[in-house]
Length: 311
Ligand SMILES: Nc1ncnc2c1ncn2[C@@H]1O[C@H](COP(=O)(O)OP(=O)(O)OP(=O)(O)O)[C@@H](O)[C@H]1O
Ligand SMILES: [Mg+2]
Image (tube, rainbow, N blue to C red; front, top):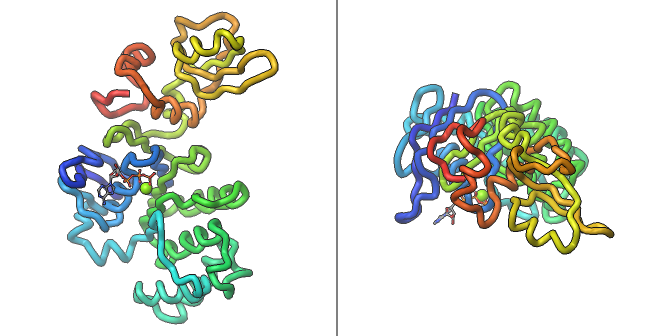
């Protein structure tokens, strides 16, 4: 188990993250938040690369700072941007990293062949990486993070640059990996984690806004997501009155997906099942009002464990 206790991280005087408490067991965790929310900061701290300003991170009850090398042996990490020599082949790159991790030659070779196959790079393993697409490079990054068969796998935006087919393959790889280790990945692409993650962590205003199963996170908007058609002359007022999740211009007016209180629903509105994307768009909407909490979520917020978080 990996636990985060009352962790705060400041850059200068500004707290990027504040009072973070989290616990991770085997399974896949999707850290979902917009740009600048502190995903990389949290993942770097979980990887032991950035010390918390306050609080501590424990692996199996011991501080990761004290475990140091012992923790690193159990850790696989894919940074948001990783460095490689463009003239290297994936095979050579993997061998090089395996040597740094102290693996023997034979083990390193076997393991890297296996992993390059697993990320579907077997056929190009002898090609120079400078000829690779962004998605192929990203797959090399995923393979290298798995070299030491880590118990804790941390992936910072692993799906950047992957096409839909590669994303689907990546999701099934994640599910397999999460059976016997802790996998924590960050993304702002909702579909990456909607089906593959056992739990979703949402960060907001430097704090944990929610940590729960995808269904429970979606249930935050249960009974509040509607769709309807709005005419051209009504659409501006409509946009001012309701948080909009999606809109589509049509020959006759607009098709809107939006959030509203059940009590104020009009009979012709169609009630929709909320998805994770709806929650993401709603929680991180622009120009949100402080009063939105009372207006849209009177009382307790299902799935939200943090007290006093303004949405
Ligand atoms: N080295 C640093 N020095 C100063 N401020 C930093 C540093 N790294 C991050 N920050 C700030 O901390 C906040 C969180 O950044 P972080 O990179 O953790 O966000 P993120 O969620 O990973 O964003 P992205 O989706 O763009 O990768 C941002 O406001 C960022 O400007
Ligand atoms: Mg980041």
